[in-house]
Length: 327
Ligand code: ADP
Ligand code: TRP
Image 1 (cartoon, helix red, strand yellow):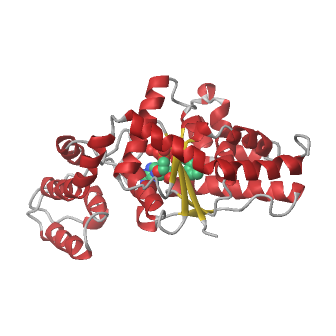
Image 2 (image 1 turned 90 degrees about the vertical axis):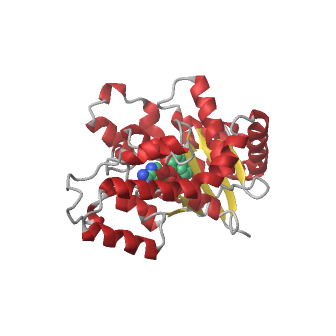
Image 3 (image 1 turned 180 degrees about the horizontal axis):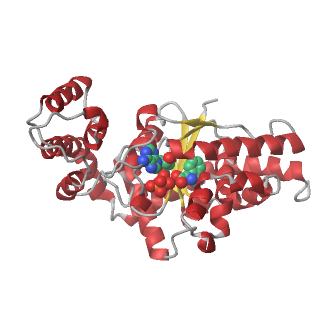
């Protein structure tokens, strides 16, 4: 049997370069060798998105992104998390074998608390890792392509599955592995911190050339003068350029940095041209399909139908083992 690859992305807005390199590209590349199942994590987005139109628009946008980047709906299932409401049932069942202490150690929850948002932290944020575990375990997933920030969630998922299996019976739930591409595990944003929607430091891969250029020009550098030699290994522009250039091209740019008389503005322009050329064909496809709601909804419906038998199989196993229902 082919192994299963599964991942999710929240419908919280427009995907950024970190999402693309860390998750979207690796996930799509796996569709050849794996049974690939990817979804828009609306339930997870609901912890912060409180507007129905924004939620639906983002779901469509993300679907169009995946399709433009080459997700093949004939091979992979691409669907809405909310079309599989059983994940919320499994999340409850897992909640009942999950220690509060583990959830209190979750990075996302701790970060929200450290930012002093304690009054605003809803239960969804606290329980977020349990729902994510349910997402993964309900498909008997083997691998989960994600960026480095999700590795802790995968460890928690394995913990919950192990605990469940220990209580109810060996091998009821399959233990998944995170799959992280080292060179893009944490893509930096224009300010050098991890690229993230919440930091306002993103580059949008499929925006217009003009906006892409503007975003590149916003990359923060040190204040060396044009004539000064520069250090490619301590520069955000170079760090991003590396992700798109061949080794020869990287060596060439590094030499220009070290020689001096080469400004960060020049480097930003080279980075922009590289990314613009790379993304141009995807952008064209994206613009063709992004407003075709019938097509996008059709893909999402088909995807949900495809995963249904797996969900039913796993949930039957879980209900039967836990004593829920009549069998
Ligand atoms: P964000 O972190 O911007 O809110 P999501 O949480 O929806 O985005 O992330 C979707 C996927 O993209 C996850 O697998 C996550 O690990 C990955 N990802 C997000 N930001 C980055 C980044 N800067 N570098 C690498 N991968 C990332
Ligand atoms: N938590 C992930 C994120 O913030 C999104 C997500 C939800 C996910 N469910 C998942 C990722 C299941 C992988 C598998 O990016």
